[in-house]
Amino acid sequence: MTVLTKIRAFGAAAGIAVAIVLPAGAHHSTAAFDTTRVVKLEGTITQFRWINPHASIKLDGVSEGDAPDGLWTIEMTAPNVLINEGWTRTALQVGDKVTMYVNPLRNSVVLNDGSTGSLYVGVILKDGKTLGRTDGKGAGSSN
Image (tube, rainbow, N blue to C red; front, side):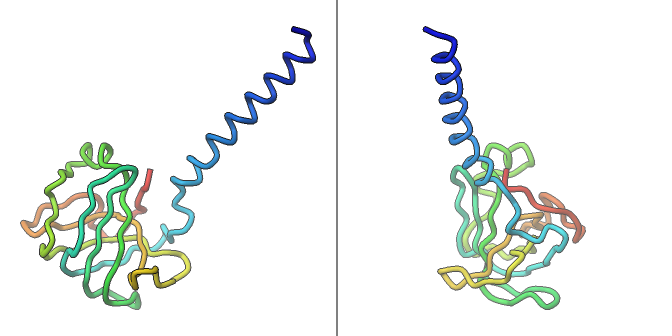
């Protein structure tokens, strides 16, 4: 194998590695969310999905401030990360009344299901237990 062939093979391998890694990095970006703003939502859980790569919540409720009332979709991080933060797959049940803290989307758009999109920051569960940040500050994470 000549030096030029080795360089070409290395370049091709590096290009393939970059092509694989870049989409994964983009997938975990929080750029779509306004992490400088926290919205408080009080409402009822309508769905809790404990799945990879991200758990998610749907909450029908009332927001504090100028954010819209109604159905919200709340993206979370991976279940294995949530477990380390005290979450369990049964922490939320459909019908639970909770207070959620979320980072809204930067550009307020209605999602395909009619909900408002957001990123999880914290929650006060029906029994009063808190997970995440519930002081009205902070940024969520979807990593």
